[in-house]
Every structure is written in C-alpha cells, then in structure tokens.
Image (cartoon, rainbow, N blue to C red; front, top):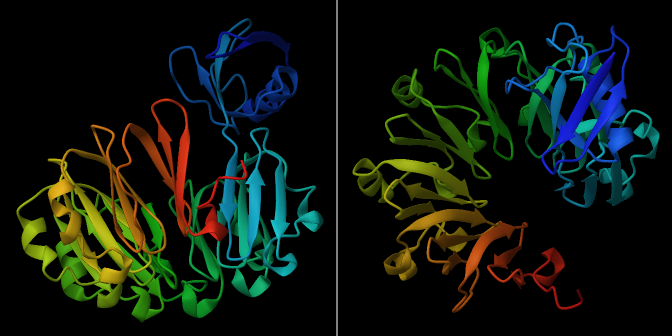
Length: 389
C-alpha cells in the first residue's frame, strides 16, 4: 500500500509499505527516504500513532496522509562521559571508557533510540519499540540483564547516581543498579502500579500513582523515606515532582508545595514556607542543594543551601515577570519577559539583555539573544567559555 509521509516544512514522500507492517516499520522507512530523524508519526486527525501497532490498527488506509515530527539531537552526560543521540536514532559516545564512554559492544542494539538517561557512570537508552539497552559501569546501572525480560513498553526512565528506574506503559516500575541507592524496589514493589510520575534524587526515587499515592525508596537521607505527614498531605494531590541531590519537592494542583529529604538540600522549606503558602507555584527548578519556585504571578521563591542558590534576597527586586528559570549545579538564572537575565547562587552575570532563551550545563550557562548570537558564562570546563567557537 502507498502512504504519504509529510514534514511540517512541506517536504513529503510517497512510500510503498507492506500492509502487515508496523507503524515503527513505516517510521524507519520514512527516516531512510527523507534522511531525517523522526520522533513520532501523526494521523491526519491529530492522533499520535503507537509504534507497535499495525498500519490497520492505526487506522491507515491506502494513500492516507501521515504527518512526521522530527527528532532533535540530544547530548546527555554522565559523570565522565557523553552520549550524543542523533536525530536519526543512532548514538555516539565518548569520554571515560568504563563510565559509558565506550558503547561499541552495544552499538548493534543502539538503533532507533528514542531517549537516553544517564546515572553517574552509566547510560540507559529507550528504543522505539520500548525495549532498553544499557552500558557503562555495571554497579552504576550499566548492566540490566537481570531485569531485561521485564523491560518492555518502557515510556520513561529516571536515574540516581548508581541506579535506574523504568516506568512501563502499564504503570509498573522496574529497577536495577545499586540496591541501596534505588536499584532495589522490593520493599515497595507491591505498591508500584499505575505509576504516573517518576523522579530521582542522587540516591533515591519518588513515584506517584494514579490515585495520588506517593511511594519512595532508596537511601533515606536522600529522600528515599517520606514522613507519614508528607505522604498524607500529598495523597491524591501531586501534580509535579522535582529533585535536588538529596531532597524532593512536590507541587499540588492547588499550587501548594511540600518538601522532604535532607534539609541542607532543600528538604525543609524553612523561611520559604510562609511565602509559598501565600502564592501559587507554576514550576520548580533545582540545583544540587536548593530549589527555586516560579510563581504564577512571575515572582520567585528560593530555599535550600545559600551557596547553591537557596537565597535570592540579593536579586529579589529584579525577580518579577519571570518566564523561565534554569539551573546548574549551584546557580540559578531567571529570564524575565523583557529579555533581562537575573542570576544568583555561585554565578555572576551583569547587564545581559535581549535574551530569548537560557540553557544550563552542570557548571555553565548559555543565553540565546534576539539577534541570534549566543553568550556563555561559568566554568570553562563545563562550557562557560565559547570564545574558541
């Protein structure tokens, strides 16, 4: 049968496909013919097509138009290595040999990669068909062979420093890696069903079920144990979870914020509790040891270790009409709607205006200005010096 695959740019191509082919087969063929990485295929009525469905199950008939959305290339870093996921689903790695920099032995499996997640010294890749491939230090989650048979229809993966947790389409969670840092979920496995949200600190995981129940596991000092008062408060009310190195924060639909874990990493709201109680929170961003809440009115509230950005009093007067907050290991950068950048924590930037977007690495920032130019600052080792390019 013939199908018309189209890109948003207007480029299109008629493809001959077998009637019993799967959607993922059509996607792979379209990638080769169009020479573009494709993330999803969408039916003319806007329905996102499941990659494991047959063309008939997806409702595709002869000459049916199919819209393709392009994949974006992504760079993902472990502690000492980098994985580059290309738009066509292939992966290139470099860096420390034993920390994921060498992926040669899994290259045959690293085809049609949808997403890559990094622990401290390992990587996990979700393939288009929902399977998972890992590499790097086995003790950091680089070997998932013990649970390989359970890793199917995986939709998302979260990582601590030494473990991974995968959420399947059926809502179940599969863990591997260092047992003490979240790789063993046996204590709570019976509760891990219908999981909707999954997040990780450095040594623990937090998950939220469809009924709103919060489940935590991993190292207690890193948020792996949530006090009963927190669990009771959040029951049925979690909209989003954010994590610093050793603490978690949950946002309720009402905008209320609840924190747990190491107080020095933002696990205690402290003086910010009063401010947050009187405001509605839109989103939360974290450094290693602090959190910053973007409020519905465009204001900002920060808490946690002051060295990591937990204190924004010095720039509080400038924090209004904020549209975006980015974070490195120990610094926050807020972008105002008028294009002005405001920074606090362990970083400084002065008089930076006309900015439309800010991105962060672990130790540096890059700002895209309205004229198309880029300004960088921070630690040179982490990309803070863009002078050579």
